[in-house]
Image (cartoon, rainbow, N blue to C red; front, side, top):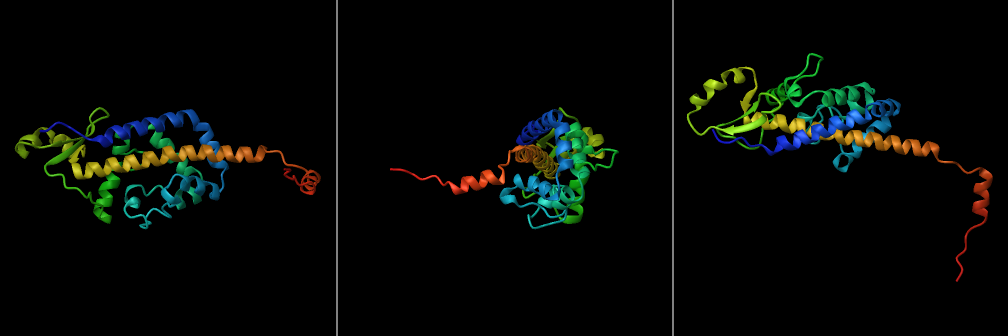
Length: 231
């Protein structure tokens, strides 16, 4: 077997650590602000971090290609229009569980990322563009997470020791492993950006409410006395 390699794993772990840090620091503010926003403000937060401000309209919207197959949760209908709990629950789950737990899923109704991608492959034709001949990915624990290997010798010689992991769905073809890592990377990045945009929207709203307003008389006097440039 060749040495493991996967640059996406390092970036994913950094993003997840950033999400955990932001959530711990701003948990109360995130919940208070998000519950205070109306649908228009929530939609603005979601669009602020998207390229060109374009986001999924619903979970099966294919106008952005395969985006809906990777992160169907990040859509206007569920996040902006269905009420505050959908996003708050999603952020809490992703920020308080490990990547390995998210891979496997939870008993609280959150499907594992492995299951989500497998279902997208089965029902919606999701495929990785690259072929990974004789390669597989391991999702055994946090330390050996998403590492990919290429089989150099006989396949049967390698498969036997890994049979328990294969049966448990923790050793899978790299083509699927890469899709799972991409889903986790995209979703984690989306939530990190969204938290920043929620805090920014809350800051703008607060400043707008606190700005002193001139009286009508003062405003009239200002208009009546235009400033003239002198030479």
